[in-house]
Length: 244
Ligand SMILES: Nc1ncnc2c1ncn2[C@@H]1O[C@H](COP(=O)(O)OP(=O)(O)OP(=O)(O)O)[C@@H](O)[C@H]1O
Image (tube, rainbow, N blue to C red; front, top):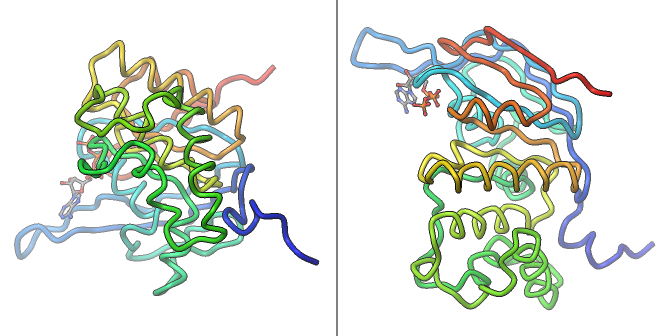
């Protein structure tokens, strides 16, 4: 049976993955004799399609946890499973394929200055087939973040909030099953931050993606389905919002 064109671009599109962490540890060496326990014995279950805020003071392990789930960094021990994929045993191309199937948004937008917004959003599609759909997918993603009319603008011609919207469109263009956002509003003023977090929450609900957002903004965190507080790499609070 031949697959539909969009399936060739985004095999796992339009629904979220569940997430399961069991006894995960990540330690860093600081100096010769000091070990930093960035994530310790952390177990967590996130159902598919849930939005989760990770909060906690600076150094509590939020970024490290996102890096482990995103296969940017490797856990020292424990198990991380995203849908059917065991992240902790991924190697080589399989790790790259997994990273290409999720969306990641950072505090510093990491857009390429010399490229237009459209070309920045198309970048993750390079090498994927069919090539002729890339432009349409990127335009669709820019429309989802309200920037269809700024496709030709370069990052320098856009405000900080607009640049983060382009970065969100770039994360969405692969139709991710999991969206990780590490301090996505850390570089923005409070009004723009609120707009960006509202946009993320809206898109997450609309697309049904599983989403984890590390943030210091408690008001924004409360908009999501669940808020998890970390301290010294461990979960110290886990509040789910009541569902009607
Ligand atoms: N590459 C590294 N090498 C050594 N220590 C690290 C490294 N990355 C993180 N750490 C340490 O691990 C701990 C957790 O850091 P992490 O960046 O995950 O915290 P965070 O909650 O995201 O902080 P922030 O809110 O400031 O971004 C901190 O003590 C940090 O100094």
